[in-house]
Length: 280
Image (cartoon, rainbow, N blue to C red; front, side, top):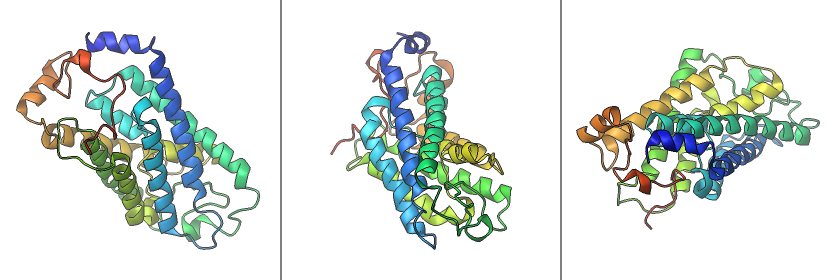
């Protein structure tokens, strides 16, 4: 079966819509839990926020990986599309669901906490607005260009981790893939949360921006993660993957039915594997 046929069949496959729902719920719970983490303290605890986002990602990826691949991030989804691991139909459905999940999650969070929390915070003091719903903003004296560079860097690291944990051609992977991905998110926050808020995820930034109607420097949190994710996907797939090589590069550009795992396409998993199915 060709990839073109598979792309068209995705529109009729109920499993694709089940996976889309999983992405919606995954991002919804990610923003509810992660974006709630600054609340209840008079000083911002960066370690608490970092662990909240990182462990949330690890848990959610572990839960929905077998259903959707556990992307919960448009940057990851786009990198999977560019490296031809998923179809265009799946990419569009996933990203739409992720955006919707982020907005719904922030609306739920707003209803739960905005009446009583964070009245003492201002953007100028702590990189957060009053009742700011963890809106991503640039730190004091951080330029948009610097913010863009940070988001490229930390998203690159995250997506490299994602691709490494789902590399079916490697035999040296042990332990928990979802935990490795969650730790990559945690590290990105610990290092750069004061500079950009350490988004690494356009959906996570988009939800608060829509609900608050504040799109200041929002492009940083879209273009940066997308560029970092695409670079990471291409670098890992063609330079670091267990089956990397010139043959793979040639097949990528010349084969209509290119299979990144060098397996017969009819045997390719219906659900793209991201973090489980790792030998233990």
